[in-house]
Image (cartoon, rainbow, N blue to C red; front, side, top):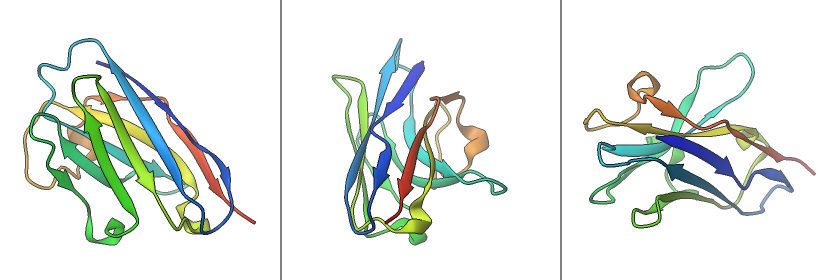
Length: 124
């Protein structure tokens, strides 16, 4: 599976942004996909994940409320809608895919495929 993330940019605090992740190649073995973000000196953290077949979404407690993950499995595209963006949301956002099942879906190590990342900068 090859992943291509897009949609990042520079926005002001309070703005909204939608990221997209296009998957190419076979997604037959894909159990779930997710969005992670990373800032310099910090570990990559899960923002949201979604099971590819049933579309069940998972959010870490710290990410609930302002982020919405969705997918169009027929078109092999995943989205991350972000609202009320804050400066602390500034990061490189990566999309990733995993073939391993699980309940929390939050371990980056269990995702085998990664996109190149898209920069999101929230600043006035």
